[in-house]
Image (cartoon, rainbow, N blue to C red; front, side, top):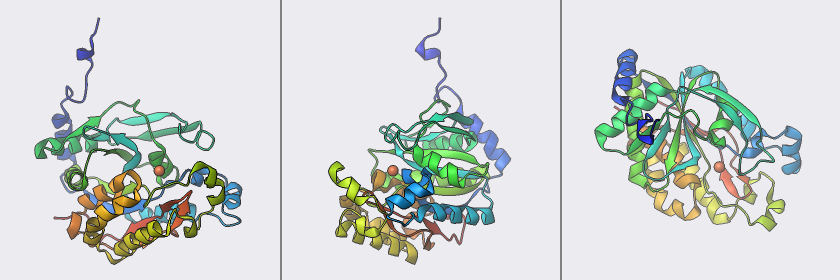
Length: 317
Ligand SMILES: [Fe+2]
């Protein structure tokens, strides 16, 4: 009879050996070839007629925006998508999903009326996941490579795949809810080093919103539209627009420095989807400019936008 201690875990599987195998193959010349912040609102999967009705005759621009992002991805031919999933929370470490394949049927526990019985079947990126864990160990950054194919999937990842996936390997990355600004930046740097060693061509997607406060339940029916006027408050909208403007200037140092103030507006998942990406791109010394791929919109009060970053270099040296 087996006991719990017989079950192989990521600590009993030699992640270093796996990582080295792939690192040798990859030749250490991996690059981030694309970077974007993308909204993942459930509305995107609804039929256009329903979206138009919600928007009072106007559709969200987020659907067309993702199609434009896919066109941009086609020009840089990534072989791997790294997706920071802002609905996947962890507590004691940074976690990446490192199984070789994910297959199942998903119904959102949050919105079973909207996202339901959605089949998914995609290839993971186990070699990159193992490298992330190896680099984390080398640098003393707490990480886990979860190689369980049964780990729950979340719709930020699945919505990105619905619009952006063209057969690439996929690495979903969780958000450690006890991490702070420097932890997120450092974890991003760990992922960047893993990408460098992997030899992969990575599109790095932070799947999350800006300010993230919903209207109270009774008020939600009055705020179904996508207009920026419907964002929860003028102050939240102004803060979101400051962040977008700084992205457009390529002024990531300002965005990072604004973070303590931005936290007052409850950015989705502590803004980890951006901070991890920024950490991967060099943190305060990252200067690539952002380009809006959608309007800045409201989703039930939250601030939503797609921004593509025009990368001048693949990775910081
Ligand atoms: Fe969300």
